[in-house]
Amino acid sequence: MHSNSIRQDQSMHCLLAAGSTLYVKTGKLRLIAWPQFVEGLAWQADTVLDTGSVYQVPNDGWVELRALQASDVLLHKPEPAHWRHALVQAWQSLRAGWRGHQPH
Image 1 (tube, rainbow, N blue to C red):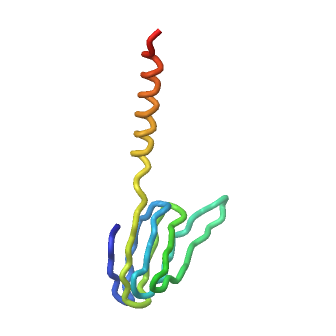
Image 2: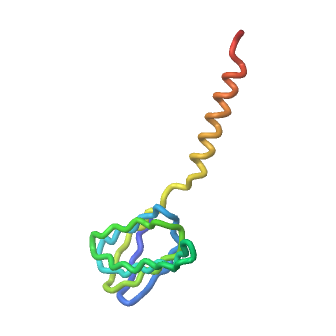
Image 3: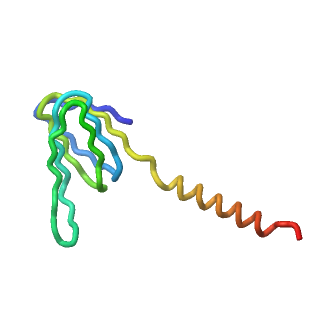
């Protein structure tokens, strides 16, 4: 989890993975997600977050956080999924090995 402070009228740009969570500890922010394109249509999130607000990022991409008031923000990025995939593959290999070496 990362903590950031943003002064009033300042901005911060972040590249976030889907599932990342922003928690506004203090202050007031405007979150602007850079445009996403779905089936040829563009849409853009523009959300105001007050103290205590939680926002979960729905898609990978860049967001801009503009401080409407001085703000402290916690950013929690999801765990990378690659370790889960490696664990599943290891488990499947072990199971296949056990099946292949059963006594007759």
